[in-house]
Image (tube, rainbow, N blue to C red; front, side, top):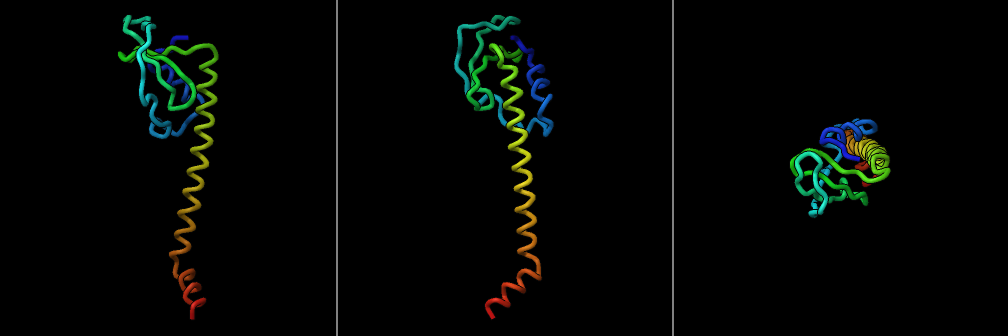
Length: 117
């Protein structure tokens, strides 16, 4: 399946709604292939999608992405996982911030001082 450049982003956005920055880097590194872009005839490059175990090809001229059988479904699954991991991370960071705030509070520090006096 050939996805135009923005269509991959739209596919991801179906399940991931934290914004582009939270998705991570799409392409870390790539290798040339012998397949050609259907729009400009440039050779496609192969990469690991957002550093997962899913390999895809893309046109360096930003025309689009080549997805094999069921890779669109796999993209959605990975974005669902990424969103769940991101939600868990935000929750953990919020809880940690509250814990630090409590530890820095006057009442908590007073209790610790009282233990040593």
